Amino acid sequence: MPAVLVIAAQDDWPTDRVVKALTDGGAEVFRMDTAQFPQELSLAGRFDARRGWSGGLSTAHRAVDLADISAVYYRAPNPFDLPAMSDPERRFAAAQARAGLGGIITALDCRWMSHPAAMSRAEYKPLQLATARTAGLTVPATLITNNPAAVRTFVGEVGGRAVCKPVATPVFIEGDQLKTVYTRRLSAADLADLRGIDTTAHLFQAWVDKAHEVRLTAVGERLFAAEIHAAGSAGHIDWRSDYASLTYQATTVPDATAEGVRRYLRRLDLRFAAFDFAVTPDGTWTFLEANPCGQWDWIEHATGLPLAQAIADELQGAA
Image 1 (cartoon, rainbow, N blue to C red):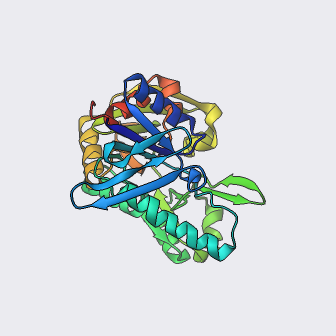
Image 2: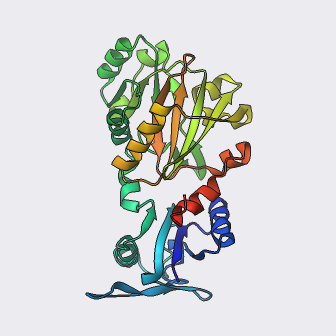
Image 3: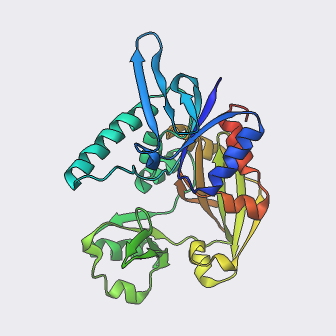
């Protein structure tokens, strides 16, 4: 019987919603977290010229034949949980697990949402901006640099109105505390003291005057958009910094933007992405970024947009 393989952290409750939508629709689901391998998850994969990969994955309670997997939902699983061993052995074992388990799973010829290789590539913001431009989306002037002089030149060229944001994940751990680096507008004081810019890559972008922002969740060909309105000044710059000030409203996507988003997905071989747009007072949608593994559940909760069901439908080819 065809089965959907779900690969996600065991405690990821948005994935619980997708699994429920799948099973409510009669789908066979095998859910796993890579953290279960090798202590709770067993792999036995066999390759031959007639069938390709066969054999299966199993836990103490469930099993699935590789040949029966018709679709894979891949969403940020945890690292392998290896038995006690020395650090060199652990590194070696982790590499073998990644190449063995990961290699077999990524070799599956089925519907993916989305393939990990495509997702990994699509995380690079320079590629996101280039793809958005060629897809026909409006993009802001952007500089990535570790050169303070280049920053001052760029800010001057965009009329002195610019923001600084991380190039990669904004989250890091320091002193056992989870910290987030938010987008910030550059001030004259910032430009007067750019010490530290030369230590790594930084992303600077022209400030976009905005009436509000939009989180557009793309699931296959279906697009679900929600306006995000921030009541506070911090949330107006980066809405992630002040969730308490936000309100949401489902909205429609302009035809040109919808076409650009679908071109973007096709060019990066994605079936899912969470797009962030700034909408100017005159209604122009400006692309900011697109996360191939972005959060969506809070948007469904706030607006009623049927995202979990849309993901389940896409995995079954029923969208």
